[in-house]
Length: 298
Image (tube, one colour):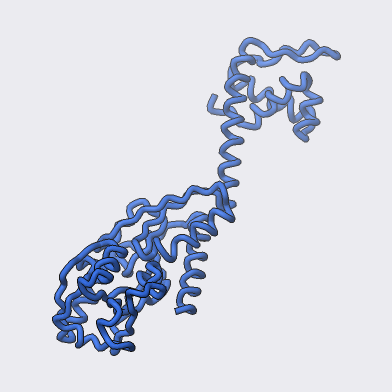
């Protein structure tokens, strides 16, 4: 059976459906002798005749062995057609992509990526995994958004700089830029000291600025809610402010920091040497476009 090929099974199915080698040849676009050769090769592989050939105008008939072979042949041919269709859909972009993300990216950058992919490829399977971690855990992810380049066997693409701004309850500071030195000892609501938050706090300390952290929370909206409540101010990346629609909030005020702090950097990461699927490649293209749009509008 190891010498059986799909083309032999396709020829058998055509002969069984058409009732003659000649009509099967027309259906398949072969010569009649080619169909005869393929049936002969199949009969050699299975060890017996699969058709009785009465001759003349009478239709060929399946032998008992042929009936067994044809049943499995049709199943194998259907699986082959399904595989071909799946490969074609994959190449067209209707595959699966697994993307790692974090809050501010999920709120601002990821929605237009998902929307565009679904509009272009309604049959695609997009799976998202959000995690706030100090080091990227790519595992089996195709792509991962992260506020750092990553270490080890990781390739990266920088998308944008995400500068820090000060968010305060209105009236806490005079209008206009605020010097980081004015935040020394001031009550501050903050994210947990991981990822770029830790780097930002180390930069403040290097400048001799040590805010009084009164509350830490991983939730962007929780940070903003505590600022509204008067717990303290917050130094946040601009993407967080953009996602929280802070500019339209009458209770909050945005201040530039002068001199400014080093901006958070947003990257796309993937495993080094990994071949991207068409869907992952398109996701990268859209992410770059979205990042450029955000940078221009900042």
